[in-house]
Length: 139
Image 1: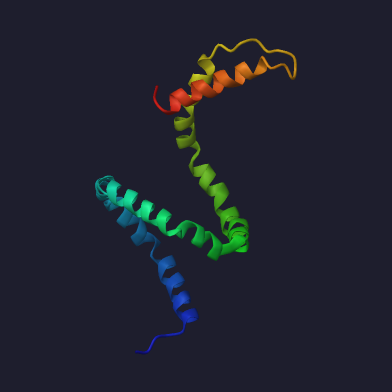
Image 2: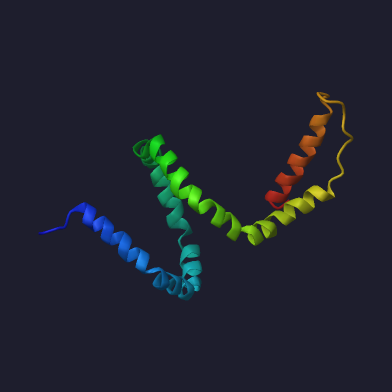
């Protein structure tokens, strides 16, 4: 079997994938309900896969194989390029998802502030933590 060299195949992969942005978009637009249905039905498979990965030590092995340098290199190049765009695209969703927690905070009646270092200030922090936790778990 003749197979081209890896470098040529990698370039072809990037070239073809880059040219397929329109097909990607139309494919995603047409598959929303299928994604939701199939993803919801895959809950047990997801749990089994995660459990198997934990048992096999795959997460730690993947971290070890990638190494710190790969993380730093990718985060400072690709991640840094995508971060502003991703954050900008998330503005409305962030506001929608954050508002309920902000409402919880706005509704709190905290104990009075005490002097700096006073253990009574911990009661304020505890009230905030308990209210946000109750909200997060739906109680």
